[in-house]
Image (cartoon, rainbow, N blue to C red; front, top):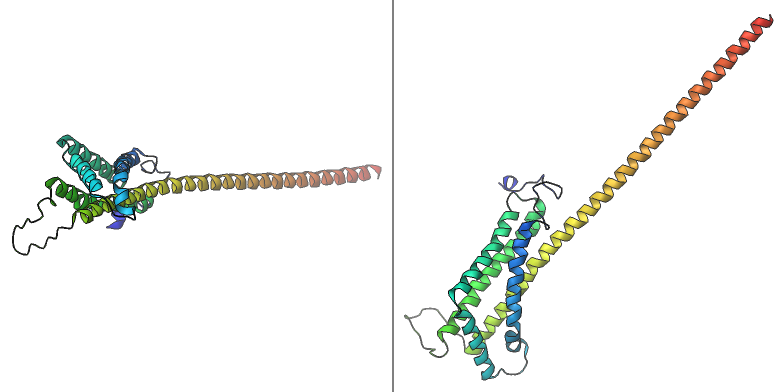
Length: 245
């Protein structure tokens, strides 16, 4: 099954090879960089909550909640655009992994795995946390749908810290996707340089071989001509000896 899915004969010189310089890579890198930009814009809100040694003030938590509520309650068009951009990334992966080469399986397959993990972190942690903020889960903490539901509502600061940590984890995952794509580009560039070097060496070897063959043929021709001249000279000397007799 794997042999039918992976085209082992395909390489960087193949006509249908979709590598780092293909348009599908743009479909991958574009959404990844877009979401990294969004996460970078949220970093000033996440930093005090995660890496500040002192206690966080309630005023800061109120400001963070306002920011998250504003983002989550944005017009539906924004959410649709985000879903479309995520789908564009998946489209790029599916294009590169259609009849893939071994390099596509290694680099793009690992990138797709990270992208799926990132989507899972976004849906399970970030979206759920923003919904809790919009619903005011900490303003009305006693919400029980049934006995022993198994759900545990964290405190306000802890929940916001989980959301901020999820943003950081998602950013690291997306950076990993970029690293793999850059690694694919570097591997292709290195392979192309090695191929050029090998072709140059093969051309030089062929030229040396042809030169040696030409020299050998010339030497043989010279030896043959010299032998013919010696033979002719001997025949002429024999003829002169016969004439004297």
